[in-house]
Length: 293
Image 1 (spheres, one colour):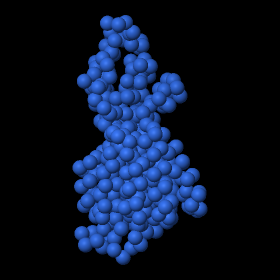
Image 2 (cartoon, rainbow, N blue to C red):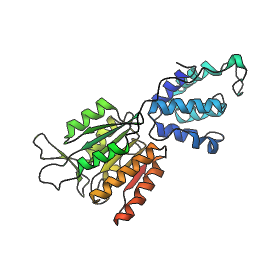
Image 3 (cartoon, rainbow, N blue to C red):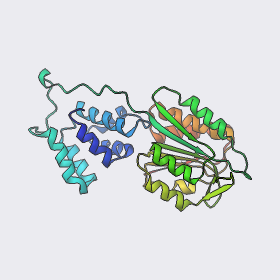
């Protein structure tokens, strides 16, 4: 435990990682500080811890500016915010933390950062064009094999109940759903018999709204899934959907490029842009779409 653990716990309850990132952009000297924030694949706990430590080192953690931004963003939690900030700002008059040796802050936590959890859910039911799901999963495993960086959880041949249970059990930061879709925005999973199970847009959006928890990003690798993805923000920070059919090789390369760059600490928008640009080599006429809060 550190002196700022209560603040970190409060921030985790009040903000997603993307919300906290945008909050920092409203602070003084944000242009200098923002590039030093943790990457998009950091777990919520690790992102918050590193952000708090960065603000502490910059002397912003004790400032009125931070207090005002927090209160403006979450006015209904004023009592909680004031209570937590008072614990380490008492006696401080917006001054930077003392650098005297006998007042040096405790050393950072020794435990390793928790890995980001990516939930890969897939289905290719009978009677539908077969999807290269096994190959997609294998490429993701190879791309994300950096020890401790990303934890990949796979749920193949999934039905709706499998998807729901996996979201409840694993609380991922990223959900990647690979399946079929239709022009009405319906998604198709596989029922207990392996036949098609239709998931209407309202049902999927409702599921994500209820279980959004730690989710920062939903990637829908399905035809016409931009219809559903466009409805997910502001429920969660970001969602990616496809407008049309992507060749299997193109879809795999898109996912591999996206997650490789997220693992390299690029922001979601940058990683998405690089992954989309890669699709030009496959002659893709309609690129995936990113929707952000």
